Length: 196
Image (cartoon, rainbow, N blue to C red; front, side, top):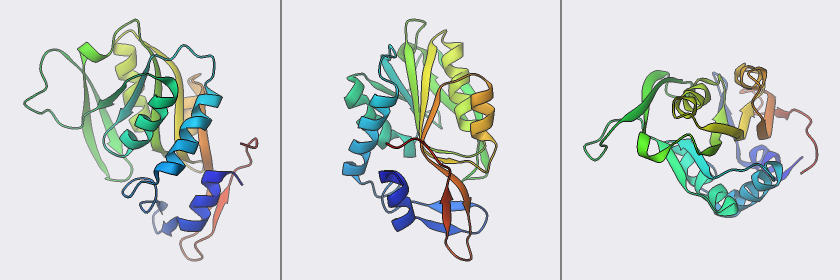
């Protein structure tokens, strides 16, 4: 088991409906020491890629993306889920469906923050059905920018998102891939991966 799998096994809670609660350390209360390990690992896995920007989606991806950005010494852009009065100018917009919230949102990125010169690493906390990632990829493509890679903290390997994204030809790295989980027993099984 790697460091993230160990933490999920220790503190993750499995709920009915294929829900994995990791809010005590990842996406409500955040363990910054753990995020530092994740940032270092994403830097190792995408070493050599000409990344000059990190892209994520609000809100849960922002903390992880911010720490990852320190390792690459680049800015973070996050797609907003609502149009606010301080958003101005032309926007890239994509529709995404949230597995967790069971609703569709439009996500928005100002065109001034993504351009054809950008080489983007997309970072997010979870990958389930892949809709959020496909929305972010669509925004990068609309900007004429390049997706250099996609880094995910936790992938639900029993759902189709990872397979869809990999089949599209993207370099996708997930630090923990949950192969199965059982709400009745709380058991979580991880896919075998190379040692971190």
